[in-house]
Length: 338
Image (cartoon, rainbow, N blue to C red; front, side, top):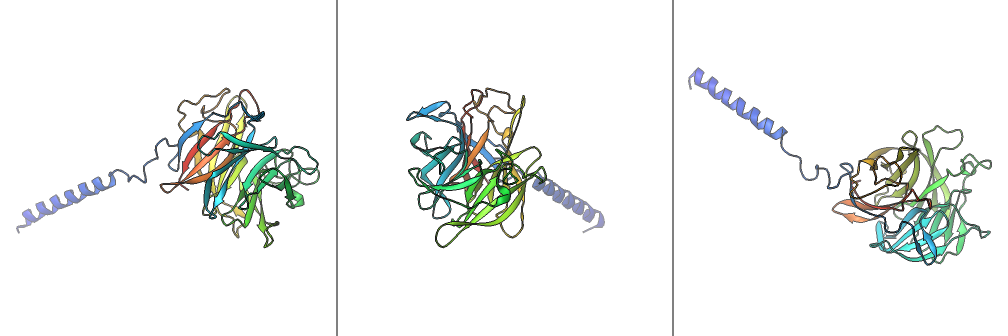
């Protein structure tokens, strides 16, 4: 081949390769990389919401003030949809239909003296009993399915509400979850202890003994986003933690962010990454009775994993309406790639 012809051929080949490179770079993302339908973020999508229980009653009991959700464990991994429960911070424990979310039963809980709890966290244990956290003292108590008080877990002194300890009133055990396998229980503080940095909250663990009770274990730290507290924590099937961070600004509304934290291990600090700011979710038909960055938002406090679909977790979230006319009892169904 003559030199000029060779140069021409080489130039054509180079242009062809460059064009191919451009086409490769500009190729559309795969289905897995595309944002999910009704996306709040690449990792989280909204599959539905309902206000069906807002300002309703069941068997003479107000259905609201809901601060926690729990599903019974199946084979130590995902949830048993036949056993969905919701807990109000006024000591009412509701059993809900997992599909319609309508109440099927209710029992009233009480402390050792018959007084109501400020109940904020809920775990359905493998034996059918419930573990319930209250931020009054704070405490974690065990109850039977019918609401009978069965016992109480020991709590480290520094986590007690001041002046007995360093926890602020109405700022202690807000979240409660059991890691897969059922051996490790975790309770998350809502706000920092007196003397701790403004963005640092404690996560206390208990280890189940061979007799079935729990003894205090390691304590971890978790850093919140500025101005937010931890309103709920729930374990994923692989032992990592979904964390709801929440805040409220008068005249602006709620901030609610879903974070994914490490499985508790040897490191004393739990690292996290943002899965979604719920203000970025779609809001198909949602309304708000007070200013909100997104009308879908409210005072979200309860969360549980209810299953798995297409490699993603099905997560149910509920808001605490505080029996307030401008707040709503609202359930969100999220699909989360964790």
